[in-house]
Length: 423
Ligand SMILES: Cc1cc2nc3c(=O)[nH]c(=O)nc-3n(C[C@H](O)[C@H](O)[C@H](O)COP(=O)(O)O)c2cc1C
Image 1: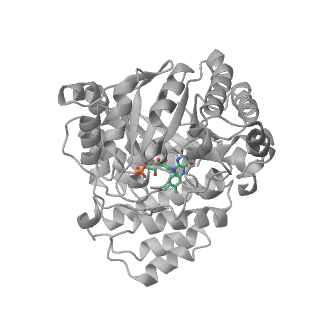
Image 2: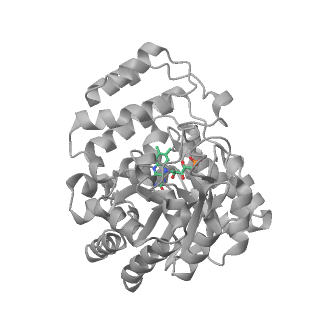
């Protein structure tokens, strides 16, 4: 099976008895045509990202360790003609041609519009990385990560700490846009509300991104201090949407298609980005597509249908890892925990998934599931994945003293990148 096999995922799942997926696949053609009709219900319609028309303004938000091409392809096979963004790649790793980073830059042939996310703090390294993307035709869209709240990133001034330094933020965007624009590659920025409630950055960051040529901004409506705790503040999305002329995508706490509609209607955002809500639920994109098209159709697969998706996911991961089944099924483990969330499946079976070492092991455990168990509706609208507040926001020394970088900070910051060790 080739990486391109993804286009028939809906058919495969349908063949395995997933009536919901089959039905949602059937409405796909009309849904994309009627996405624009959503405007009559206060929903955003199609928009242009550079020269690319995004028919349904829905994005799979980049998630490290999750949104590699097998997962993107599963989501896309259910979903609308939206954006499906790869997990972040550190600019430094890309410039070092790190093999693990390069693997994460791969796309399936079925991904006709390829969105890559770059992370970094040094404008020159990011400029080089963007040059590599352009020269090697590696992507059709570059998103820049200014939203990561992880302490090892923010204590080096990266991710969501970075927009506080407006000069550095501007310099990075200017350099990357300068490299990407001539190649027709739109650049977008993903930001948070700020560092904490008294140090918000999103309005400045949005305006700078717009001034420097970003085609779109995605706002995860939490501060760094909020990490993944509580509920994101959708009013901030409305505020940013009002403040900018470029499209603003809203992000945070979309667990159901109804949440996606609510965010769009409450904030006036140009589109919605889905992170944790689709962990273990790639079919959420079908639900959202249907909802945007005014259809009440939802997928809600049985356990047997989820088993078929797990097997499909496993097979795609084997391709991603160039035939290495062990690596594939290890990657699959966290997804299995998400897939089974809420289903009445005993600890024994869950443990067996965690102990799989091959595709055969996965098939055996899937075969042991009761296929007729219905989808656990009681957890359908509940948060999943990370849900906690930051213990403490880590920042470089004196970071909050000024909105611009001192020479000393510049020197310290660019010496090494906190994520160098990740690869
Ligand atoms: C496991 C995990 C990994 C993430 N990795 C990234 C990433 O690589 N780049 C990024 O911009 N955001 C990343 N995020 C943030 C998500 O893209 C998203 O902004 C966040 O989860 C809020 O959206 P949600 O409430 O829909 O989950 C990650 C989130 C999670 C849970």
